[in-house]
Amino acid sequence: MKVGVLGTGDVGRALGRAFLTLGHEVMLGAREADNPRARAFAAEHGPRASAGTFAQAAEFGPIAVLATRGLANENALRLAGPERLVGKLVLDVTNPLDSSAGVPRLAVGHTDSGGEQVQRLLPGARVVKVFNTVGNPHMFRPDFPGGPPDMFIAGDDEGAKRQVSELLRDFGWNAIDLGGIEASRLLEALCLVWVTYAVRTNTWNHAFKLLTK
Image (cartoon, rainbow, N blue to C red; front, top):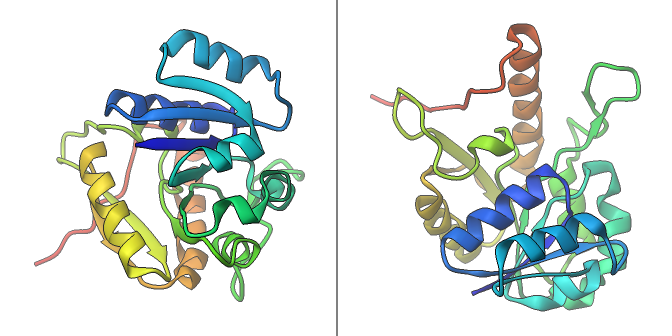
């Protein structure tokens, strides 16, 4: 399957490598066609990896990963072209974090979320919030003493969430569906729980697990 990744940062490259490991083709997209990190990614990973613009990555395949900075989502999707993502599964792995004051905080919350904004910007796409509550080193095949952690997801399209749940199993995660895309308000706040613990303990090696009885 072809997967277009919008974003050349640590998260985008980590997820791109994961999809390649599972046998998929990946195009890493950037604002400019000649982005050095995208070119390096393609050169490092062989014929199933390529580099392009946001628009080319959006056009590339049936799955797109939105891995830009959360506050840059609107501009990135404008450059990608919402019409290129109609009918496609879009994995929103971003968080609307504002670090201008030093300590990260949510720029959107309570009555709206970054995930809801992405779905409004892409009315024809099937958006699922996922991978926003863990650090990129653990997004693929996480290895923790307590067993596989849980990945919370949210989205309005039930078929899209089933597809993401299957994908998460391939990535080594249990999937927990929290409902519609408005549950992104909770997941983006949960990201801050993850970040706050990381800052207080100076460790980035943790993930969430829901225990049931």
